[in-house]
Amino acid sequence: MQLKISRALFSFVALLALAALPSGIADTHSVASAQRKPAARKKATVKKAAVVYSCPMDPEVKSNKPGKCPKCGMNLRPVKAEDAAATDNHDGHAHDGEAAPTTSAAPPAPKTGTTTVAPNAIKIPDTVVYDQNGRKLNFYTDLVRGKTVAINFIFTTCTTICPPLTATFRKVQQELGARVGRDIELISISVDPTTDVPERLKEFSAKFKAGPGWTFVTGSKPEIDSLLRALGAAVGDKNDHTPMLLIGNDAAGYWTRTYGLAPASTLVKVINEAAAKSSSGDATTGKGDVQIPLPQTDASAQQVATAATSGTPKSAGGAAYFPNHVLLTQDNRPVRFYDDLMKDKIVLINFLFTTCKGACSPMTANLAKVQEQLGAHLGKEVVMLSLSVDPETDTPAALKKYADSFKAKPGWYFLTGKKENLDWVLHKLGGYVEDKNQHGLKLILGNEATGEWVKLHAMSNPTEIAAAVLKLLPAK
Image 1 (cartoon, rainbow, N blue to C red):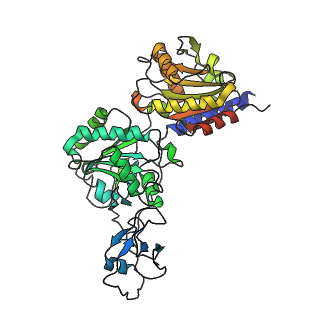
Image 2: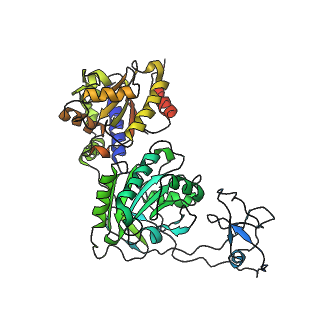
Image 3: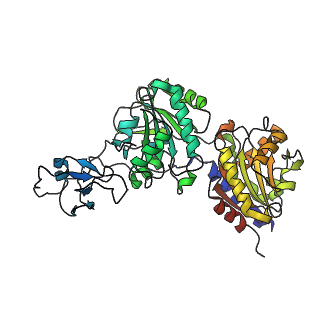
C-alpha cells in the first residue's frame, strides 16, 4: 500500500513539474528557401468586361458573381482580370454563381535567415496571415521586423478571458496614444482561425475601438497553428489558450512575457521598457525569422522538477509530502492543510486573489458552475480549495465576501493565513508566484487516497471539469 501511494505521489510531482514548464515549446519547421517552379500553363483568354471575384484568404476560390467563400465564409472580392487569369489553369472551373477551387501558383517563399538572441529560444516565422481588413501580410516582415510589439491571443466567440484581455489592450492603446502605429504595434492573434475570418475580427475589433496600429490576425488553420507553436501559445482546445502577453523590441533583440490581464498601466510600463532597449548590434539583420528566448522556470518550479526526477517523494506517503501548515478558511476557522482538507479526500485546487481585475472572477464563476454539477458529493467525498496568492490582502473577511458573491457552498474552502505558511503550501503545489498577477490558471484534481492526479485549465467547460472530478470517486 505504501509503495502504491509513493508511486502515485511521484506521478503527482511529475504532473506539477510538467505544469511548471513553459507552454507551447515545440520545434518549428524551417520554410523552404527555394520557390517551386510554376507548372506550365495554357495561355488564358480573358474577356475585357469580365469581373472575377476571389477569396482573399483562399485565392484559389473564384466566382463570376459576388458571394461567400465556401471554405472560410469570407466575402469574395473583385480582383483584376489579369490576376485572375494568372491563376486560371482550369483544373477546376468557376461556374456561374458558384465559387469553385482552382489550382494556384505556389506563393513566394519567405526569407529564411535567422538571428539567435539566446540558445534556449523559439522562432517567429514569416507566416502568411490576414488582418481584420482582409489584407494579406507576412507576420514577421510586416508586423514585427524592426518594431516594438505587444502580442496577445484571443478568439471572438470566447466568453471568459478574451473580452477582458481585449479590453485591457484597449486601455493600453489609450495610454500609449499616438505611439501605437508609430513606435509600437499591438497584435491580437486568433487561436480559432477557422471561425475568426477577417470580417468577424473586424466586427470584434470595432467593439473595442481598435485604432491604427492594432492588428487582429487570422489565416489558414495550418499556418496559424504553426505560428502559435512558434510563439509558445499553441493549445489543443481554444478554451485553454494562454492569457500570456508577448512583448518584444525586435530591433534590440529583446523579448519578454507577462500576464495579459495585469493592469494596463503595468503593461504599458513593460512595453515602454522594451521600447527603450537599445540595439545589441547583432539582434536583427532585417532578414528572415527572429528568435525569442524562452522564460526560465522559477525557483519553486525547479524544486518540483528536481523532486520529480530525483525520486525524493518515493520514500514517503501523502502526509510526508503534502504540507500540513495551519491556514484560515473564509469563515476564519483554522485548518491544517493536509489533515483537515486533503487526507482521504478528492480535491480540486486552484489559485486566485480577491482584488484581481483579470481572470480570477471568470475563473471562480466557472468553478461555481462546477460546484452545482458536483451536487451532494461536494463537502462529502469532494472538497474545492481556492488558495489566495495574496494572503496579506485576502483576510478571511475579504475571502468570505468574495466567496459569498459566487454563492460558495459548504465544501468549497477559500484559504488564506500567515504568508509563510501559505507560501509553503503554494510552493509544494506549484502555485507560488512572486507577483500575484502572474498566478496560473491551472486546476489540480486529485484523489489523495489513490494518488490519481489530473491537471486541467480552470476555464475548461464546467461539465468536463465536474466529470473529471467524478471519475476520481471510488467505485462502489
